[in-house]
Amino acid sequence: MNLREGTRRTGLALGSGGAIVGGFASVSELQTVPAQSERHNKFKQFANSDVVRQERTTLQADEYSTPIPPGATLGQPVDGTFVTNPEYIPPPVDINSGGIRTIHWAKDFGIFSIETVDGETIFPTPPPVAWAYGLVVLFPIL
Image 1 (cartoon, rainbow, N blue to C red):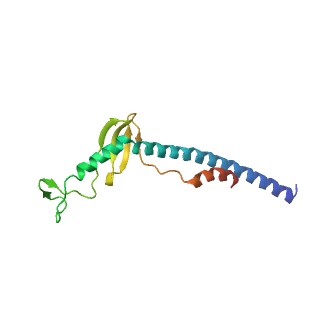
Image 2: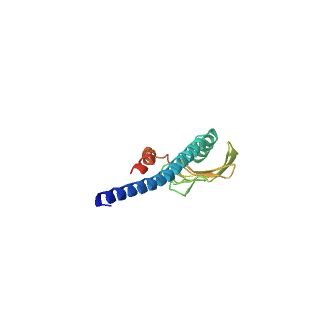
Image 3: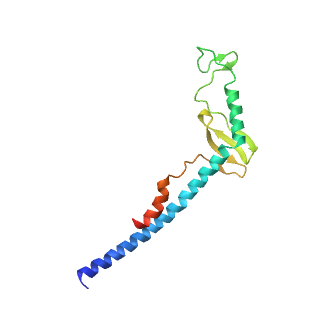
């Protein structure tokens, strides 16, 4: 065997090994991207449901129903009610309707998490970025 043949065989072995490792990386990435997309769509479906919209509207109406007089400071009683904090986080609300058991609220009446009737807790998940799908194809090539 000469230097040229040995170099060729080494290159083929390293290239094949790299493609195999890239294939494993591609498969592991392929499993996480659809799962993230599914979690995002599930949360979006629950968060945009009529039950959540109605509950948010009710909480906002309760929170902002009392006008705050000018010059009032936070935490001081004004006409028997307290001036609300802009960092107010509403308490969790038990609904037991539309597949939702409890809504845990965040600031500005956003949703921190949703507990479903079957015991699953769903958190807001960003959608997978488009280039993540491209990585699945590029890993074996790289």
